[in-house]
Image 1 (cartoon, rainbow, N blue to C red):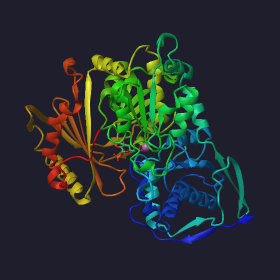
Image 2: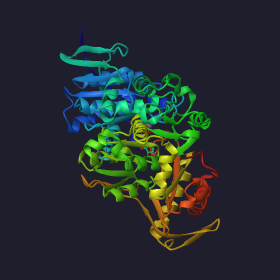
Image 3: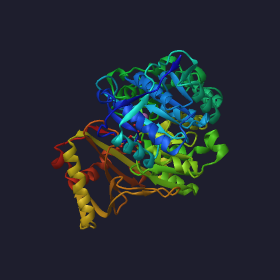
Image 4: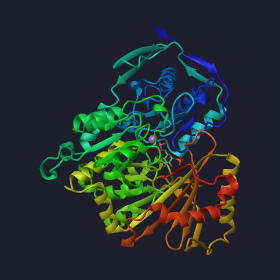
Length: 566
Ligand code: VG1
Ligand code: CO
């Protein structure tokens, strides 16, 4: 049957501006008439304005949350109408975000459309998201997402093929003819290409020996995982259980659910507390949790020892040669997002490598990787990854840790981290999130801080809290000039830098779906070995008090406590 293309008249929706990582809104919003279609049309128009969309290959899939399959069908119909040649789609519409990034690169695809709101809750009353990744496998850069946004503001029609439906269950190729032009869809196993990639990067034999306790390890190293009912379940079962010999019952919450069981699929001490409690029992040597779409991770050691993402990055960096991929290719450079604590900076310095500080969001790492200047990077928000793909990668991070532990017989997660502190000193870090504040109050607070920058009188001022005095050396709004293409990204977070090296950062989240989320980051560096094992919250309390005093956060927002502390 020759299917027909149809043009459907539509009107712009306000607020379809992609944020830190794509467009994230409530499911209800995406279900409004033409809302999803408008945004997909804007993506396709933006792609067509710079590249040849006709006959191209695109990868499509998401984290399996509620509305994913509906969105895949809409995308398939619209891609067919735009004469895209072929779509690679995960079975049931499922792919982890790192898997999509890999498939785009492996198949030289033009790009991919990822359906996820990442760590945000899912279900009919929760969140959904759509993001476009470019041909290097990474999230589209600002210049491109601005193009998408422009199209959403002037849209008048979208193209679709109303009578086409894809079978998302059956693996294999489905062929269609649309206005005389062939269109193909291939449904693939979401896991297998990713597993092949991991086998290329890591020595699975060595990790298997660690887990089973062979050779120098003497006793089994007991590992457990929590997929928080997100997309990583099948990846965890295949890699850690089937390939590496971890026991099946230690792969927890490994069945992806459209509503993540009603919880936040967010791997941190608050939302992954069940893993923390399991680890605290002392029977496991290693634990890792992953977010809804599989790009974030949290690493825990025996008795629940918590590795901050900033330390995790630094420890992996300092031990990079334990990972075959880095041993073979060398380390080109390191990077972190601006609010991430500077533990990796000390590793870079010692190794004589370049260190880049970029704005929040993985899209800023891509150019540096493509230019061959960056191998390993991370964010404080539980994201770590390397240039094997162009997304952060949760399962990869767990494998990186296990490789390092396998190369250090008898070591524990805790001993690796404490040894690291002994050598480099410790960067204490905390982040306070004030979720879903009223937009007006959050804006007023940021305006107030901006006024302090312009006024400048605050520089040199001393703030005393709990017996500690902090003298302000600098206040600014972080801007970043990409060293590869010279593009400028401004207003990326207000920084207060103190004379003793302590730092405070304020920014508004770009991934929330409603209201404004204020993120307050605090960090300091401590070389004193006696303080290495102190509690981060205790160490940082005076600094956070200064933050609240300077920003007048409570006055502007009415909040007297954060929603989440990480
Ligand atoms: C947050 C994090 C940021 C991360 C982004 C996407 O953004 O702070 O570091 O890159 O989420 O992660 P924001 O703008 O809300 O602070 V994910 O796992 O949602 O793709
Ligand atoms: Co994510």
